[in-house]
Length: 365
Image (cartoon, rainbow, N blue to C red; front, side, top):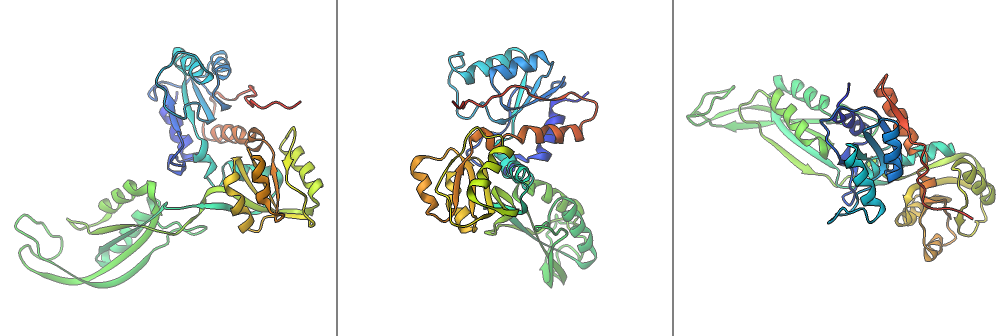
């Protein structure tokens, strides 16, 4: 048996909530995490019809991509699709958990899934996340330095791109004098002590701060541990929105869009004027991505695939790239399959079900 909170822990391993954008509403939206899970239904949108499917399939946890609760509710009377879904979930003790931009920003998430569907190579994040890296600086004696470094690395510090166990150390001179209540490991209370010390510097993702500090205090031999934490201006190259990669073989614009239409099962594609050059470098951003047009241009993309573009935004292509709106649902369509596959690898002999409901609200004539 699994409690819902145990499944949530696995979901947060897949898509840490700290990765989500500030405007978003991710995590457990409805329900009691202490309840025993009877089954998990994974969907794109947690609509009332999905709740009915969950009831029929004996699933009391619905994992959705889009959060059904996005802005505050003052009343829940069933007057709209959001309230009806929430009422149905509460009435039948169904928990709802949303991943949304926590998975959007993950390097293996929504946009990597998008790239994989198109067979893009050499992929990297299009808009790396800002203000996400912190630096810890601490000090200890040489005989304790190795233990401190190892504890910090084990807690998740020192990861830079494709490298881990990264740190910088320098040597200096320290002084201290403990008062009558002190219990120094080195030196004597009431006396000034001078000695040699190692300064250790490591970076870490900001959501790991409490874990990093716990590891520091547990591994450090000092009674009082001196440390500093700084916010870094560096971009996090492995976390962020959108992705850019390359086609194995360049294609002419018209052939490329037919290829995309087939791979993403798009009913139609709205696009800017074709360029007088083949498409090789492709930027993608699942969902509403008009804000990233300039990023795609700056990254040298020949084409940018996204959704929800307005009339005047097609002008922003400026004949520098092929801009294509393939549909919001279509650009994220394989996300729920990814979630199901991830959970099935982590949780064996348990009902992890892919929703059969097509929740795309947009229809094509």
